[in-house]
Length: 231
Ligand SMILES: *Cc1c(COP(=O)(O)O)cnc(C)c1O
Image (cartoon, rainbow, N blue to C red; front, side):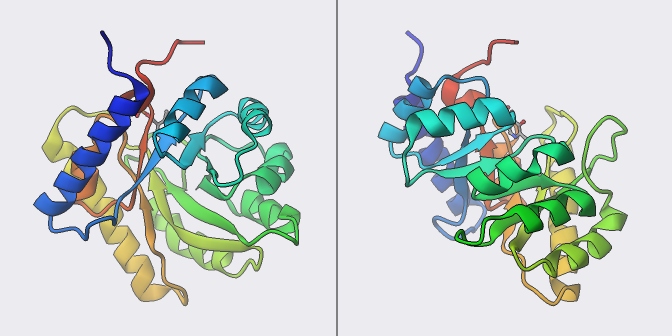
């Protein structure tokens, strides 16, 4: 029998807390985001009933359908997919966090469109840390200027950096990439007028390496819900 969502979440919590200890991280310093793209609302509800409250979605329309269907006020919704600039209003209205901001135009629109009655929208700047042509994300060189500009937008709260490294099964390689992210994070914190507190990195295949290198939010899909159907 395959493990249930409930069992997967319990196992992940154990793995996260054991990695926190192993790498001298504070207990509870790594948050778990359940990446629920392509999963039906019933599966999210199973995760919710296992105590999961942070959910990450990649595709706007699919996410809006689930947000409306579930209507659970204590879920924190994280948008982690590529952003088309004509879709920013719905993202600014329905999400608590956006991890995939990689250009000023999108940040400005989110800032203008964040409803007044809501708290500032939490933002991570996505970094193309493996410098792949195919991937979205700002280059590490652009990060300082961009972070400075975004930090001045009043309806956004710039919280940190996010990365989706190129795939590697080699733990040394994984750690090298995450270490580069941690160094960029430190440099920004020494330079910016604000303090960043979030490193969004680590997925099902490289979570342990990300925790070793200082992640504060791991984004796990397969490890919770099993393999995704290819659409
Ligand atoms: C799909 C996705 C994940 C989760 O990947 P898994 O390998 O299924 O854990 C994390 N982050 C982003 C940005 C994703 O698109």
